[in-house]
Image 1 (tube, rainbow, N blue to C red):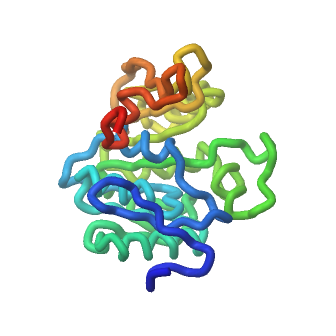
Image 2 (tube, helix red, strand yellow; image 1 turned 135 degrees about the vertical axis):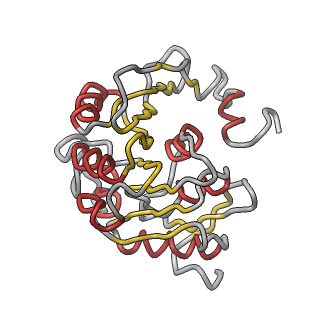
Image 3 (cartoon, rainbow, N blue to C red; image 1 turned 45 degrees about the horizontal axis):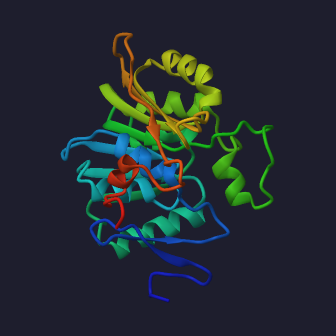
Length: 249
């Protein structure tokens, strides 16, 4: 155990620029959705980025690894997760680029500054509070279910955080796509780009990646599907590329 870690935690290799992240199996650990969102999001090296519901800080760290953004602020309501994120930031020597703030997403604009960000990213809770099996562990419930905030809260605050023509990026579930589009338009985050993620080419999509622009005109580009697995269960070439690996190695 390193000086950065607490009992029960583990250090996982992100396999990019030597970065590692502290995780705890009893809290919400990052998955492929965070990796895909960090790849889908576009940001210049000079951009100021806010990541809402940052959890253990995975998206800010991955964005830094991909040279996206000059200053990244992660907002997290759970103190234990925010503490873990801060220790991961220190471990990777990224304190000059990443700041972790403890606070409620419903108050994001007041906490972080209205109209002060070029880009907002978020990997929010996917399930409405009543939908699906609620995890008995509170930390995972808050991460997966709209307990502390809902979709409208996230989109409204994201719009407030962004400068005019600022970019918003989110990963979510396709079964809520109609609601997502409706709420984005209401928040004046015009949907501009969308990509559906399929586990296999002949299966239904399980994720959707969406880009919106604050105050933009109505016109959306639907990108080609992203397929995760080949028929034999191996990652597709594009997924290997996103992970920074070569197929077969």
